[in-house]
Image (cartoon, rainbow, N blue to C red; front, side):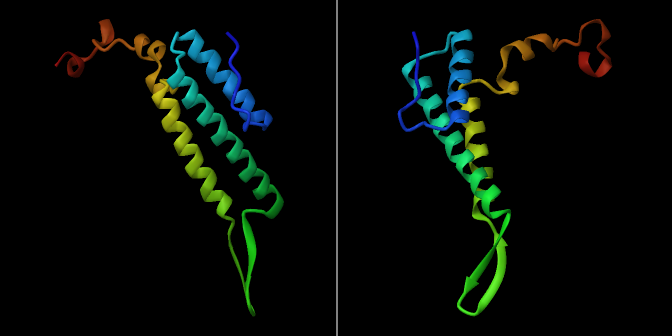
Amino acid sequence: MEHKPKKEVKHRAAKKLFEIVIRELEIDDNLSDRTIMITDNLALLEQLKQQHIDDIKLRGVVELFKNGTQEMYRQNKSVDAIIKIIEHQRKLQAELKLTPASDRKVSGVVDPGGGETGDAFTSF
């Protein structure tokens, strides 16, 4: 079944992220209405992040701020917004079990018993 992002998602990077996440969820057989909703939110956050990146490219990391006769430079608020968006995306990815820490394949490779090369501390 073909899944499409919400109509509000227009940015190419956001659409691509949506497709990648849906593919990963299909591989893990974890596709449901709930995960599709979370994936839509991830794509919308990606679109916002791209808009903030465009703003930084246009205005720079710092911007000239004028308040009457005062002139000063201040940090572009898009920088903080991007950091918050990335943190939120990471939380949603963890909820979908798409982070390296939540990957079953990675955790299955590590032998918790230490195997034959375990030291005294591992066997303790």
